[in-house]
Image (cartoon, rainbow, N blue to C red; front, side):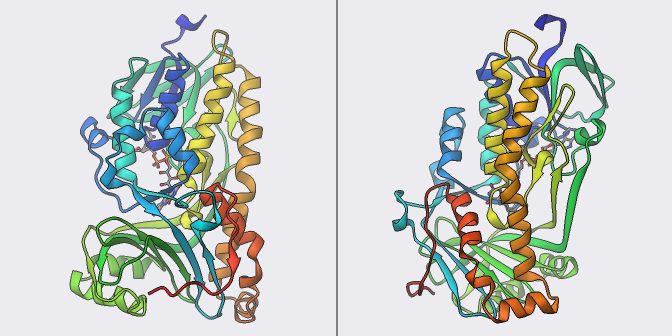
Length: 402
Ligand SMILES: Cc1cc2nc3c(=O)[nH]c(=O)nc-3n(C[C@H](O)[C@H](O)[C@H](O)COP(=O)(O)OP(=O)(O)OC[C@H]3O[C@@H](n4cnc5c(N)ncnc54)[C@H](O)[C@@H]3O)c2cc1C
């Protein structure tokens, strides 16, 4: 039965989640075709894209199990010891201290392009994975025994299951007739690396202010990733601003707490749109990564969640290996498990973002009387999702920080 199809599984999108899923499935003995619109060169040497991914301990273990972690250079891994959440108008500060967990750090920061490069290097060495780059999905057709994937090179590939890993604006999702609820936060996120005078002490900051949100992610070598969330036009202005003027503006946005700041990378802007697919599966089709759940980056969990999702799906498809891995029950079990795993985190994240940043009077009142600061259980959910440890964030004065 298996040999009547070109592949057991075809994955659309060789982003970090598509690549990891291909490795998981190949490890389970399945033959995988991976379709990606980017060229072979840009997959092998992805450019810096400004994203620094906060990896949980569980994600590092999953990457190690897939053989990806050894391909990440030690210099690209920055320990994330502590985290500090601050709100502009109110006095509360929520400090998450790694000493309150059983771990030496809350997690690790690794550049997205380094994860992609490592996963790609591992995938090209895997004989059961065929990487079909420079192509894009043109259409899908499903019949009772197979899914058929058409590319813009006029190929038609048959498989038992097609998996969409092609971003939150997924063409696979649309071609499979699956809807998604999208939330446009009306803001954009500018990300870049900066060197600064005052040490970051390996502490991440999330600083919600009335008109913008600032974040600082501690990297190696006296640098941090600076994340500025502002209206789209302002993000574009900051992106093209003269580098020295940009440095001075960021210094002042951080109220000079980090001393002099200097831009040391390219600047990247991402519009803030979250998405949640109405279904994660259809007949002979499944969605993973951002195509299933496109998280707001504030909880730093899109990739971590995607990694768990692909692991769950691969486990279900493995259970059917030898038979028809596209048959309904495996996909249904994945749908139920991934929905359970993602729903609360997704909706709580969106609610927190609105509560912290919404300019409407009720939300402003809530912030001014410190209501937001008392939502410790919700914030604890965010942080324990980040650390995937039993971290207990506590309201108390944070130790003296810059
Ligand atoms: C600023 C920022 C910071 C973030 N920080 C964190 C963090 O700290 N922790 C965390 O866990 N997550 C974080 N995330 C989220 C994380 O980056 C994403 O969840 C993750 O990259 C999703 O991976 P993916 O493979 O599903 O999708 P993508 O990375 O979007 O990859 C999709 C791939 O599909 C390809 N593709 C698309 N359409 C087609 C098509 N029609 N045909 C063929 N190929 C196609 C694309 O070229 C691309 O290679 C952050 C995101 C942003 C924007």
